[in-house]
Image (cartoon, rainbow, N blue to C red; front, side):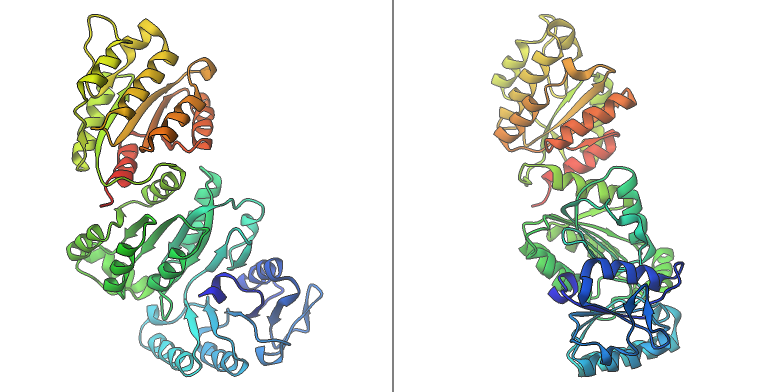
Length: 455
């Protein structure tokens, strides 16, 4: 698998000089990542933009670590035979037209697997967009140039059983709320390399701390569950094809076979996999898991610090729906909270801070209250509601909040509402310090559940 993720040399079979063709984007991306050890192959071309083109992979001057194939499906078995003769052990097939189109495509897939087995070769794909190693800037994908100078190295690995959806995820991440990525994998039909192979590699990858996966099928479900149980790295899975209609659509897309979703759901839960049901949720949960400096706790008793009693009620309902509970605060905690509350009000959980803020101001109240609930042995995590005002500098002591989270090592998620411009600035300051911020209560509770319910 290292040959796929960490290649030092590579060949592109199906390179193109046509700037609107995927073969051209592959050419530019692989050339940027591999430099002089990149070898474009096209029998009808002498060179592309000054780079020598080879008639076949048999003519290149070394055995490439990886070969990327982008030729018509019917030509792929012959190309693989040549890769085998050259000694290439890792091949990414980005062409479509295999199992997902029916009988003829399945026959081509069988031929490819026969060649691979004969030559001790691993096949990634087909019908995919390949791989991006973000820290090393190695891009084995026909995704266009939008990634250049915009991908942020980080600790989230994204694995997607789709081609264009992986590009869509990247566009969304880069344009909406950028966060750091370690690897991006589009695995397509999973003719050979599947999510289990990827999971094994990522589990040992020091650059990856969180794994987010969109899957339409799990061919080796038992092995996946065993691996998931053995790792301390959070795994977030969006598994589609839950219904008969979805399963039929998945079969025509990547030839995915239907599975009993209730059985799969139980297995994933036992394996401590965080299952989500929306694409936005998958990315937000993974992003926040990577941000949080605290260790994931197997307990789910939460304290809610809120500026609104109504928001506290909504939060309590959402927490109950997610199998969490509102923590019963210790008498010592309540006594400490009472020191900043008005005489006529006794604090409880959810902790409605607004009357206290009116009396003592936001800085003192938020600092005292957050310290008190984080110190409570009955509290496993905190959900903090914040109101963004146009001049937040006198209200939010970012380093104080971050210091308390570091001190107690308990998950904290913040929900922000109010002035959009101020909220963006406050969110940036908090997330810079490892505190996830969301714009919806339900989203925040889902993320907090992910941080507290991996048993």
